[in-house]
Image 1 (cartoon, rainbow, N blue to C red):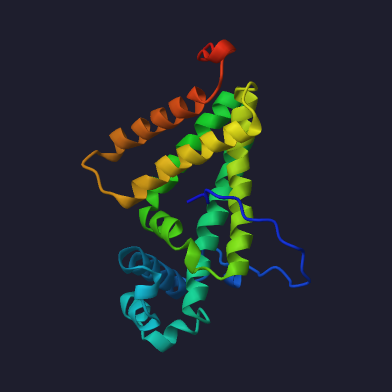
Image 2: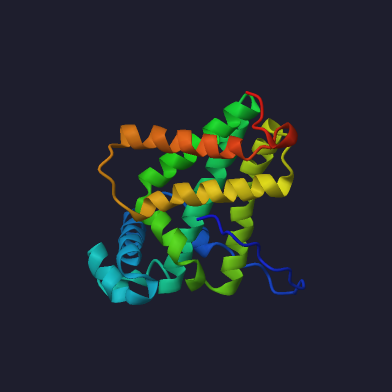
Length: 222
C-alpha cells in the first residue's frame, strides 16, 4: 500500500540510513525464496505478531533455527518483504513512464501495471497494507521515501495530462485510486481475471480523469 500520510519532518541525524535487508533481490537461492514465500502467506493469514520463526521454518520445509542461516531475525524477513514490493513497484513504475509516448499512454500503462501487480501478488500486497507499523522506525521511513517516489510518477503523469490540476489535488486523487486498487488484495471475487483487470483499469482511469476541474467546475473536455 502506498502510505496515505506524509512522514513528519525530522531533524537530520548522523545515524546512517539502514540498508534494505540483505539488499534482497530476486534469485538469491531456492531456500531464501521458500522462506520469504512461506512467511508472506503466514503474515497474511495470522499477522506478523501471530507468527514465529519456527512457524516460518515449518511452512518452508526446514527447522526454525535453519531460517537464521538466511535471515538474522523475523523482522529482517518482514523488511525483505517490504523491500521486494517497494523495489518492484518503483522499478515497474519507472519502466511504464519511460515507455509511454504520451501522458495518457503513460497513465494507462501505470494503471495496467499496478492492477497486474496487485492481482499477481495478493499475499504480498495484503502484508504491505497491514504490517507497515511492524517495521522498525528507520526502515519504515526509508521505505516511505521509496513509496513516495513511486506515487510521484503517477502525480507527474496526471498533472501533465490534466494541467489544470494542482499537485496536491493530483496527489490526493492518486492516493485514493491506489488505495482502491490495493484493496483488491483483501478479498476474493467470483470474477475471472480477464473480467476483473479491465474493470479495475477503467475505474481507475475514470476516477483519475474525474479529478480534473474544467471551466466553472465543469468536467474537462475530452
